Amino acid sequence: MSLISQSAERAYHLTRRDRLKAIMRSGLRIDSTRVLTDFPSPEEVRAMYGCIPVFVSVKPWVERERYELLTDYGNPADFVLLSVDINGLPVAADVMSLSGKGAYLELDHLWFEEDDHPLSGWVDPKSQAISYHRLITDQDLITAANRWTGTMAILSSIEPDRIKIVD
Image 1: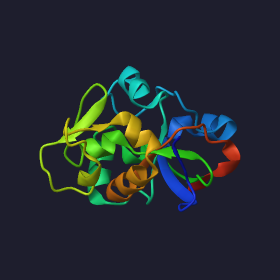
Image 2: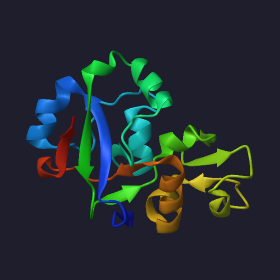
Image 3: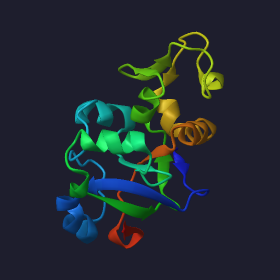
């Protein structure tokens, strides 16, 4: 069972402005293939999580690194930041953000070249890896991963009444 968000009440989701009307009408839906990146593929993400989650961050994307990432996908004015109520929703670790922290993504697990990282206590000593299954079911691991990355994967759709536009 995935962690149910109890500590964080709000998170943030960045989306293209042309998607805003549909999101405010229908919410943020799992299994949407309208994502900012093409790695990993939607099929690979679905294999990791059992669905394509809604990805959120614990803080608004204001860091320069994130802004530069955004410019890789177009004009920053074409995007809008949403504040999302995630209280009570099922949460998992954001595997893609872990890859940005040095994790190597494989078919059913990830691994780190370095031994000294905040998730080292969850690395299987035999395989030297962490399974994706654990990243969606082990509550302590999910919490540690989400604290480290500042992001998380929401494993259910988010209804419109939980979403606010951040000016």
